[in-house]
Amino acid sequence: MRRLVFLFALAATPACAEVPRVVTDMPVVQSLVASVMGELGSPGVLLDKGADAHDFQLRPSQRAALGEADIVFWIGPEMTPWLDRALEAASPSGAIALLHTEGTHTRNFAEAEMDHAGAHDDHDGHDDHDDHDGHDDHDGHDDHDDHDDHDDHEDTDHGHVHAGLDPHAWLDPANGAVWLDVIADALAARDPENGETYRANAASEKAGLMSLAGEMGAVFATLPSAPIVVGHDAFGYFADRFGLSVAASVAEGDAAAPGAAHLSEIREILESGGAACIFPEAGSDPKIIATLAEGTPARIGRPLDPSGRSMEPGSGLYTAILRSTAESIHDCLSAAP
Image (tube, rainbow, N blue to C red; front, side, top):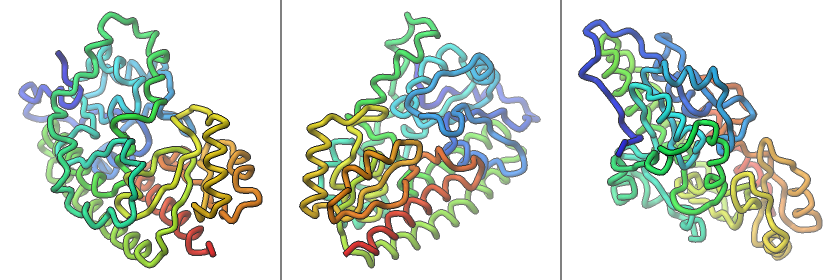
């Protein structure tokens, strides 16, 4: 039984270690790693700009890069299932699924049915959440050993169903802060000569991140707790952190077209004034949002981009996602009657 969370072979690290070769699954993770590595190195990213994180097929060159990597940082199989068996085949010397690292606050999609208003008051330290406990025993490879690599794309359907663990954990900046430390520690273990630099970079990024989170919290605290409708169920962590209420999601699952009955339910919410704003999502057709909102009191907000699909990759992408999400939601809610 193999673990996805930590596959380190640190005892084999040479005395004069080189800067690790790092591969990440998606731009938001690449951004966090890049901010920790600074000028020492540039982490690679597998997911192309604009691509769907849940539904992606690796190219041969990317498979080769995985095999040559010293460390692979990824969200986990719940977010990028196509990487699950690819890691088994590539056998990189170290792989870390950030969603399953100690200290990460996690939530289940079922919690989206709860009232999020004021939920951020209970989250500041995440000390009362035990969802991450025991994830070191996560065994994502057990069911895949008898499959060939070319089946990777066919295995992604379970990533389209919104049930169980919600993988969009980076939208809680407290998780981003936890992951910066995890990344710095992993890099320092591989490259002890630059360990102080990795940890200093992580500390600096965390300070800026927590400052931004504080500003966002203060701004949202002044807004009425009017519900919103989003493109897909990716904003539970953000809503929990900042005391927002998500009335519904247009898509019932990632890359899944909403059914007529579900659209009728959303239309009823908007017609009744049950949501102040509805938001399209970057990379998705906005026409369905416009049709749903037409003739209702709901305002259409600027597109949300929870994974940075439309943004330029790099160390600034993570905070850009948080800031853009906050500004879009704030501007729409503050203008709503």
